[in-house]
Image (cartoon, rainbow, N blue to C red):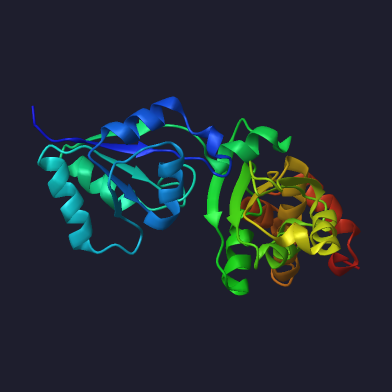
Length: 285
């Protein structure tokens, strides 16, 4: 059995400071060091809960040597708590490299669960929560953002994103373009903070909501998008299949073209054949 200290991954409030747990306070008081994403930001929380444990800086841009120093302290027997600016560390926040290396060195890594913007938004969204996927922040570049959204267009699980104030409007506009104007979306703005607000409705209405008041574009956002339903998925597949049929009809019969297109896209063959026959582009006359 090694004599290393423990690395605690401690969740902190995402807005309302009263959301910190009693266990989190106890751990932050008992460890020898607190590794914080931004020591100036975290100092306010630490002071508010009357914790005097020393703070050190640890973030995504920390050097290899900074990570090594923390690991050395842990191996020397010190226990350290890792916190981010808000919420649960490693959920779109720093910590992966440190936890990964700590595990490799057989250092005990323990969670101190608590606030997380992902689960907080899901719990009040009114969209399906039995299965969901977390995508974090999309690219700041429109082309890359739309490409990623295209890859998610047929995702049937609820999809959760984080977004910043200066990109929220263009982000939702891209979602409306790729997912469709009728896809349901929930916006959680400034969760647990004084000016918290929510929106639930279609993508098209969400764009209007964002434009209706500049305050709706301020703060931090969690965007929860309903998954693609089976009917919507079939419509997408049919459209792709029809394009394939149009190309294949130059070389093979309608029946063969439909069979091949159905196999490639997953569109229902009988329905596809019916649509193709009724489409003027595929008229055999």
